Image (cartoon, rainbow, N blue to C red; front, side, top):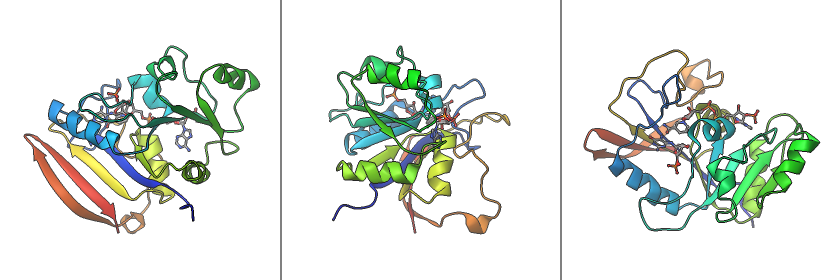
Length: 218
Ligand SMILES: NC(=O)C1=CN([C@@H]2O[C@H](COP(=O)(O)OP(=O)(O)OC[C@H]3O[C@@H](n4cnc5c(N)ncnc54)[C@H](OP(=O)(O)O)[C@@H]3O)[C@@H](O)[C@H]2O)C=CC1
Ligand SMILES: Nc1nc(O)c(N)c(N[C@@H]2O[C@H](COP(=O)(O)O)[C@@H](O)[C@H]2O)n1
């Protein structure tokens, strides 16, 4: 029987005050050692998923470079299909399998533009992307594990709909502050602590001044 969704791990590096980027979008919080750890983790999953803003601000590669190993499939949540053709993701999509998830609100012209690239387009959801349905479709494609690498808006969606299994956070030795700086979890947030998922601390790894915290959902 095909599982209804892949194993989902949320991953991020935060400052001590829970920010994942400064107000200007500077997000380099991991150390070299932590990046090697992250890339090992990337090499062990079938797919990495990020939101549109992360692509816009970071212009990431989402590949395995700091260790040997296979590149996972890259998945971008981009309801309106606005990803830039100059982004590294699109520039390298002929070499690294890439999925752009869009919703039915995408315009015909944006859809036609996307179709020119060697990417897979998955349309799920009427307004925003229906993550539950997307995960079901990924499962049907034999994608068994997904590493969600942010940002704060996407993290909230996975937590709000209880669509994750694990959380791996690097607590980095920085204080960022700023009401408008992106937090690990943005969106509306829960109203009560009792609404929060219960988490069990599985391990703590110290990498000099960084702490890697691994939680499993109970
Ligand atoms: N330190 C770290 O570990 C990390 C830091 N970052 C930082 O986070 C920041 C970006 O985070 P943030 O601004 O919150 O944006 P996100 O990267 O979370 O992207 C959010 C956007 O994704 C699109 N989207 C489509 N479908 C969904 C859905 N179902 N749920 C949620 N989003 C959806 C939406 O745009 P649309 O409606 O147009 O589709 C939405 O506005 C950057 O500054 C980046 O540097 C990011 C990752 C890790
Ligand atoms: N774990 C972690 N630590 C940080 O310090 C980060 N800034 C991130 N960001 C995530 O990794 C993406 C960059 O990937 P590439 O190096 O370009 O392959 C970035 O877009 C975030 O998703 N993560």
